Amino acid sequence: MTPQQKSELRWFFPETLIYAVLVAAYCWAVFHFFGPVLRKLSAEHRLDYAMLALALMVVQGFLLERIAHAIITMFHRDKKVAS
Amino acid sequence: MMFPISGVHLNPVILVAVGFVVGVCGGFFGVGGSFLAGPALYGLGLPLNFVIGTDLAHLTGKSLVAVRRHSALGHVDMKFACLMMIGTLPGVEVGARCIQHLKMTGQLDRVVGPIFAAILGLIAAFMTVEVVATLRAKRARSASSGKSDRSAFAGVAKRVQNLPFPPFVKLPRSNIPRISLWSIVAVSFVSGVCSGFLGGGAGYIRMPSMVYLLGIPTHVAVGTDLFEVIVSASYGTFTHALKGNVDILVALIMHTGGAIGAEIGALLTQYCQGIWIRAAFIPLPVIGAYILLRRMGAG
Image (cartoon, rainbow over all chains, first blue to last red; front, side):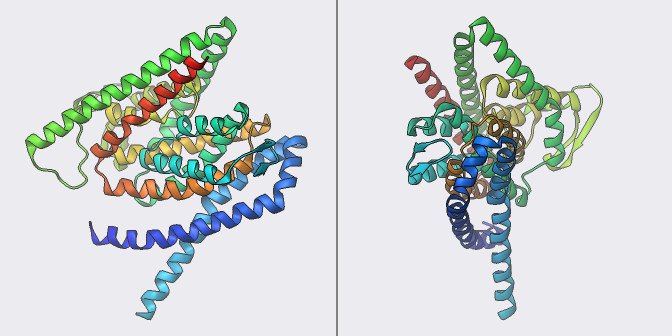
């Protein structure tokens, strides 16, 4: 294993953990706050529902991952500065 | 737990677990994994129309995560992915029209099922022969070089790359100095037809085709195939949501496991040589064929 791979692996697990927490919280929030709205849209306004469904998936798949990555990068940088 | 959009009770823990397994497979092999997620959702009690749409929505999110990770590892050839689109999109349309034609003549079940099972069986058999031959050749050389990605059938890809039909393109990320655009379009068109004809993303056909016919390194084929899955699954999600076939709440819960699985699967490719990824891929088409034959047997 190369030193770069070792370093990547070291930061992979905390990043994945943060991402898992963010994804779970996001899922809970959508279910509780937007559940009834989504149900209404799926029955009455399909175009809005289709666009919202895609947007919700992109936020969960892309944005939250970027946030988790940004948090871990910030922490990594702080640790480097401190040492 | 009650899901208000599809109106069914589903266990969220099982949904997360299914998402995780499909995520690991998708991230590692570069396939959508609908042949695993679809039967699982159907078995849990989700109506069939929601199974198709919801699975596509979940694939979109999972593939986004996996492509991000593969892209960071340098496993996505964007130029190649865009060129593949030229053949994939018309191919999907042709495949879908074939299905419509067979539906009208009442031959759908009799034709599609056996063809699909035969294709999957042939892919598994071919890959087994290739992997065994490559491992034998490797042992004979008795020198493995880190992440080398040799194939016993590399000659086939070389011949395809040497086809003299202009225009030619260069794919530096995939280590291909020159290849006819028509070869790429032909391979992507055939995989597109399979996708439209047989359903799902057809990654089980596209990924081996990229490796064996075009000579794309296995790691790049995995990442680039996932990019194709994003495009086709996004389109599928949108169009199925318009028809009321997507329960986005089920998809989001599945994606909770799928996202983590996709991250892990994509990372694992970094620690595996191409030959081992191809070897581990072999059971996938066999599982797909088994599920299909069982469903046909059930009526």
